[in-house]
Length: 231
View 1 (tube, rainbow, N blue to C red):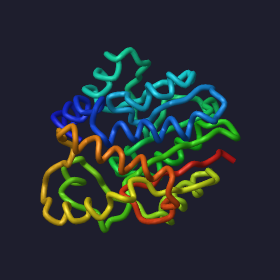
View 2: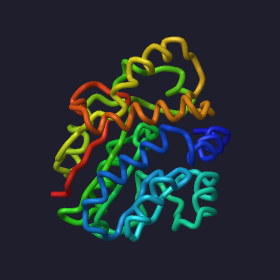
View 3: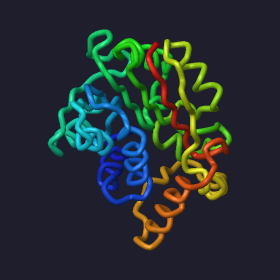
């Protein structure tokens, strides 16, 4: 992702429906876990890192981009610069490794999966969110620097092959998938991360939040969210 896109995403992070509901998802999935030492790999502006911190985790945000790392650190978070393919943590020292919308940016995602497994203690948790399905591939992905979108079985195979036992893979942002698919047919080169009118923003948040109460986790969505345990 280029510097302009990073700055735009950071500026939108506090109010944009996508980021707000993604933070709510992270909070909901992580809150039941006992706290410990965590890393948010590819933390960007640090929105999800802050969720872990507020839940009581000793969390470090790891970010490759100097621009994003500086932005996250300016928000009072503990940030280190590093490469997700060579995590700067000792073997078996972390209780949680979280990566939200990061693996798709890396050419060698097998290395990222192996490193995630390596730094987790036995019984430690991985929480990984990735964009779903190459059927949704568009200029949005190109603009954000994606290498791929993932199918469910592909993500499970990748994580299991790295030594992680996948507990669950759920779809997220299911109700808006038809809208995204229609829009992306006409998107050749632009990111969809942009300012949204407050009324529309509230409506989109409501649509995503409604999924919490509907049995849609196995239907195709815009994202996949995987939870796994280190063997």
